Length: 144
Image (cartoon, rainbow, N blue to C red; front, side, top):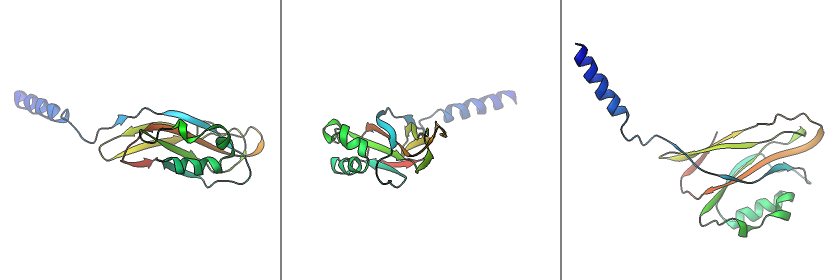
């Protein structure tokens, strides 16, 4: 009886080690810019995937700081895409919105967003954002 249980356990272990398409792998990404939008007007809190220069220019024009320091030539949209997280407007400073992890599986790309800095430093209107670049993909991007 012990041999039968051992054989079934071994077979089950080997089957669970087989190629599983649901497994995910971490995607390397790098920060393009992270900060607070405190220019005139606010931007709707959003999570975006930017795959072309036109959409990048449109976002840069909305976020005052970006239009002054970044241009579309710095991003090669034939090889890369941008992931953008824009938080809601905060009434005190010191908040952040952080893209902390990107993983890819068979069906999609999962982007993990956290708020690592909880704010409360001073009274100022701010809107945290984080923009990263990653290899271009045709897969659906899911934010969590």
